[in-house]
Image (tube, rainbow, N blue to C red; front, side, top):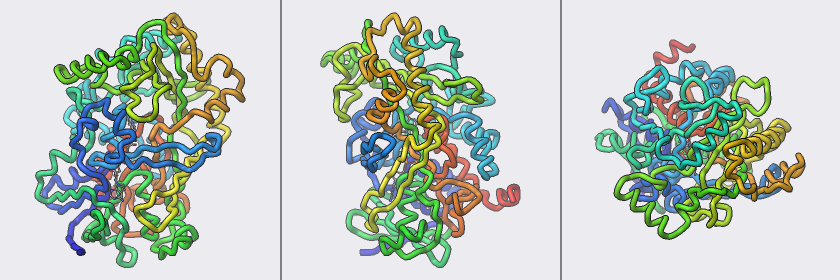
Length: 546
Ligand SMILES: Cc1cc2nc3c(=O)[nH]c(=O)nc-3n(C[C@H](O)[C@H](O)[C@H](O)COP(=O)(O)OP(=O)(O)OC[C@H]3O[C@@H](n4cnc5c(N)ncnc54)[C@H](O)[C@@H]3O)c2cc1C
């Protein structure tokens, strides 16, 4: 059976970006909006209870669970890439650390040929998306959909020891990573409210779902963009085995994320002609940058046995799990109401840098002995903690390419990490930073030993070899449909319109020209907030930015 329905806007993907767009584009009531989501409902305690992301991390009901290609930079290892496949997308399964990025990141986006994306341009959209714990200020919003909380009073006491150590080393405390500067050490702000996850499904989509002009279809997998000449006029999608198509009179907007937006473009004949010909896909438009330019943050954890109890002591024993559960159920408090990423820092690993180049995580627990499944609730059976680092602005680039004409087949994800000398040099500096921190008081007072990689791992070669053997994604895939002025090296223009085609935009983390210095959920929401304005005020914007 084939059904055909007509809408003004069709959005593919109800993730961090897609839910923002669905709300904003349907708000006036004037436009008919269709939101297609390949996954299903987010009504699960594992999604809503913050620490449940330890479970959804490997749950195929909510997760695409990609395996990436063997990566030479990681010693030929394959890696595991979770991505949200559910209302809210990855914002429903992520670790909820809320970081905008450095001001310089967005000024670099603008310098890369994207007028209107500098820090001063994007700040109003960051503010629009949030209700911040500091309230309305020059840097923060007080009335936006997503609540950003300060868990300082709730985090494990070990986090304060980490912060004292940073102070001891002359690293400034940073009480607001999303304010004047990213530099310094502090407690991570979290998109959590009253012990519940603030996903974009909860904050943007749910309040809009009662609108008659918004149609949301779940378990609806978009398979192809329909074109009339160069204009996108609709989408074909599958619900189970049933094929459907929907018509868009104004625009088709891809918000399927950094893996699936480029995949859908390629399946629709937009990409590198040689690659498309391999799969007998008719060429709609030659756009070689589709799927190229993939960036991500790649981190490695160092593990430390502790002389004093850590979160392991609370969460490993059965009674501890029961107690944590009771605290959550009766008070919405305790470790289940938080991320395990509790404290951290943005640091400069060498003199002369304008902006931090290293993100450090301090997690007051460890999980070396457990499999990927439910690891956050099954930490190691002894007192221990971990610290990890990743370079903020890696220069390596990978790719996403189809490896089949079947729209249900996974694309080939080639991360290509550590493929530049700069990124390799950062590994040495990151390791040195972690060891400087753990050797300083008061953290050094409670470190019994570094047990992974351990004291035998000292030389530059050993540190690099260890990184290649153990490092993994921090889940910040981006830049695969990058915005820019040149169609030879980018996919969308500064208005997020696909080069050379009409009525087709990409709005998600794939349009970042460079990955931001921190976590990618907040900047993805900002991109969608700004995109909604560009779409609704297309004419005014064109006039202001010729
Ligand atoms: C495990 C994990 C932890 C993370 N932790 C953090 C963190 O602590 N802080 C942070 O800032 N960021 C974090 N991130 C990253 C952040 O969540 C993402 O960068 C952000 O959510 C990306 O948003 P997006 O809109 O680009 O894509 P997504 O949110 O992934 O949305 C894409 C949506 O499109 C749907 N879709 C895909 N293909 C199709 C199709 N063909 N048809 C229909 N629908 C389709 C998907 O199912 C999904 O719902 C984490 C990510 C993961 C996976």
